[in-house]
Length: 334
View (cartoon, rainbow, N blue to C red):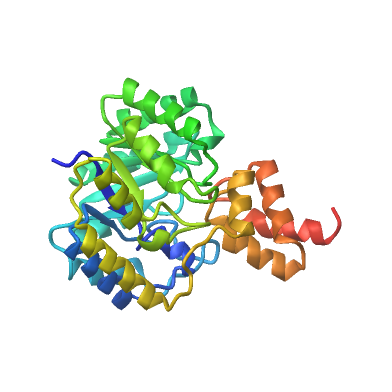
């Protein structure tokens, strides 16, 4: 058994970087390359999870069903995961995913709102899916609160609970404090999900693993919201050099990364530009970046000021409609 399970987010968190416009054919091509690289788990969903294609979160190029059908045709050994955010997706979407052979359901809530996920965990476990809990924006709560919420997810049936650095705002000490506490106090596995807005995606993931995380996330070429996720082919090389037992084939993973870059034509590969850096600096949800840039352009205001204001008022995932409100108020001089 591997020391660390790698979950590839290219076809889920990576959807944010392409405005959710991967086609089913592109998804199938990338999933096939990941399968050839023997990736443990491939996650497929709208960037905001099953049911996320909407005016509020951005319409995707195809339906959940079309994406699942395309990917399940080309993978057999890698496990298939989907994301669900209660309030965006419903148990009906979970049933659809299970019908297409999804093995894992990752259920995500804000770090203080695990109580909204009980029915989703129960449904997922009842239909035989592995249920993983994700506590988003983990930097917004102290370690003791993260533990309290993780215990709720454990009670509901989660087999693993993740600390999510959704804003890419955590310092290494923040990661260690939260992950080590969960590892010490829970009877289930612990995972960690990084964003690279402060340039700490790989380092924080390694700190998470050394603190007890046995499941971690990444994307090819670091594709993902904000400055992207931990770059999974880099993470794989780091873990191999550090002596960890990992399943994916390093050379095949490099080939998958090169394929992704060819498909994108050099566009959408994340970088730590000023806006992405501000996400981590201000502690703002990484998927807000493109929404904030569009709102700032619409109202002719500075996107940097929009992001800082969003951080100051503590806007969280699911409140995307407030981004335009903040930009509009700034344009009015409020």
